[in-house]
Length: 118
Image (tube, rainbow, N blue to C red; front, side):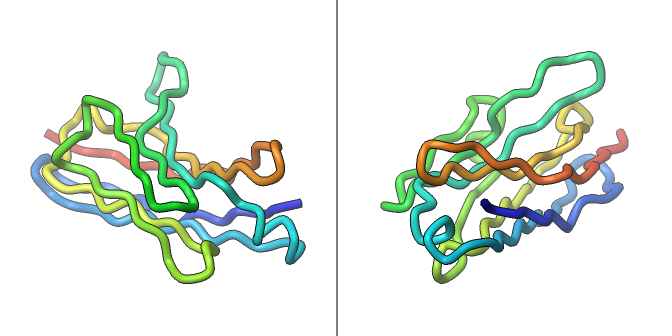
């Protein structure tokens, strides 16, 4: 089992920046076997979509809509994942969810609200 706690959301003006953090905890084997960490978001009235992922090997993947503006990174021991969001746009407004994959299972955080005002 893996538990995820997100932080860092909030209200920001267009063009501003926010940094999201997600801390993973749980059994040693589950943390050790985390293969992918990532961020997803759900905007009002829309389906949840991938924002960015990072593998245990450090490979990253970004949605086209955030390339060049967002950056995903991991802390030591793969217990923390960050999402640096720059040049934010009103269309980035959404609930952002942390996700990890460990031993074939998906785990989700509770979500953190990001609101970008125009």
